[in-house]
Image 1 (cartoon, rainbow, N blue to C red):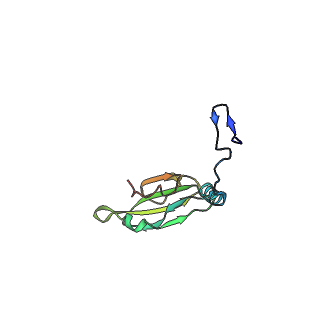
Image 2 (image 1 turned 60 degrees about the vertical axis):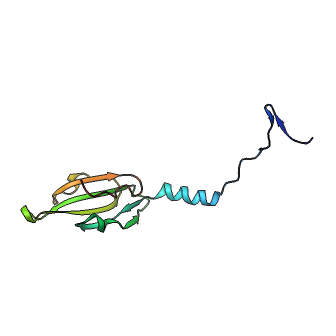
Image 3 (image 1 turned 180 degrees about the vertical axis):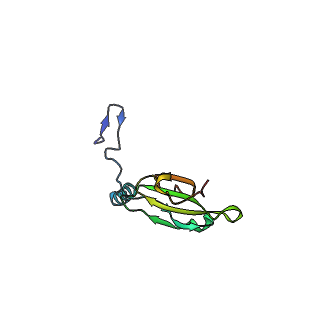
Length: 115
């Protein structure tokens, strides 16, 4: 009959399904090489920190910093978000009064305000 039969009967699928290799290559290389972080500098509101940046290939982390500015009743937390090569520690900011530091390693992971 010309049909190919395997040990379990007819096997009409003899080739793997075609894949769009161009899109796969672009997406996988992009995903492997850079992440996207929310970025802002010294903002009072997390709503001002919704802009994003494509991090460089060496920057594999997203960071959110909460820094206390002012004192007493005038104190407020300023939010900074950025791409980073490694997770920073409080020692990396000796001159700042950090209220919180959050670090994560996938795209858009630093969307939340400082805790």
